[in-house]
Length: 92
Image 1 (cartoon, rainbow, N blue to C red):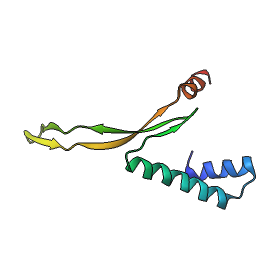
Image 2: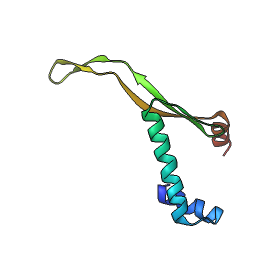
Image 3: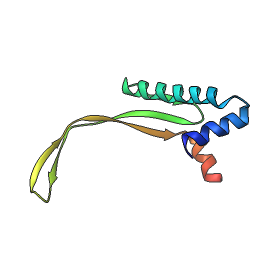
Image 4: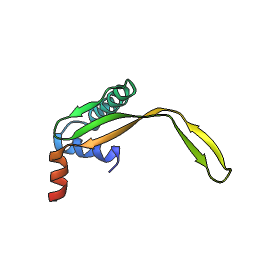
């Protein structure tokens, strides 16, 4: 399902115009992205949690060149579904 599919579905289900739904969906996604960039987790009860995880700096090897490289520390986004969401997926 694409973003356009989501917008169409919400518009059909609620009767709200596609233009208004598009603005809302875009604002929602932008808010999530900006919050995560600012190192804030987002908790959506009954759906899941968008988490910012941290990976420490580590040393890795390039086997083909037989060299060592350092991978810098970095943050990355993850999603953890809620228990009720997981249970519903299992039952379907």
